[in-house]
Length: 202
Image 1 (tube, rainbow, N blue to C red):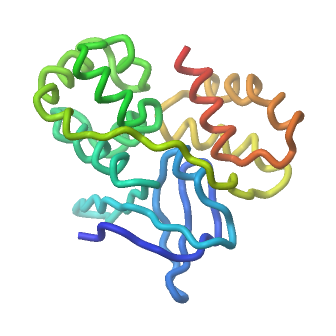
Image 2: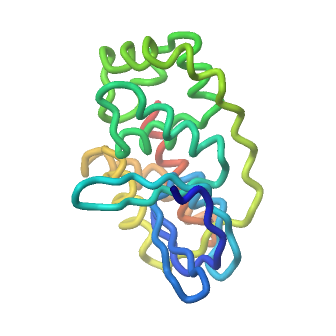
């Protein structure tokens, strides 16, 4: 099991980060919060979870162990695979997920694309006794990730679609956060993704 990686960030996207480990490049699928916490050219540590399938090995990376633990926990609920689990921790940080499950907040969980009321109720039932092990997600204070100028709309839309939203919803969310890019051209792709996620969750 690969639990943690430390290397130089060479590239970022809406939902992925590439780390250079002494010449060995590793791409990890990440949440917007994780993408927002790294910067191209700087060293970063990812807490990781390796998902093994018959035809693939997929590495998921997170800025802290709590987020990784939340990702692994929700997959213990029946019908939840890694793609939906990544969407869950993208929409609900560990502290919010813990509260939502502990309080039986179906509405909060159904903000995640791919989870309806019945799925949310099943998740609450199956994880209620296990979720209290999750801690709070610390605030992320590192500088935003750099990304190619003029490419942000496509990256944010692509990232949202990979988390389960349709192209139309993703495009609308991109337009809702465009003013943030206009106001601050240096804003990172991760921050734009998180703003777009918040707009979709309303």
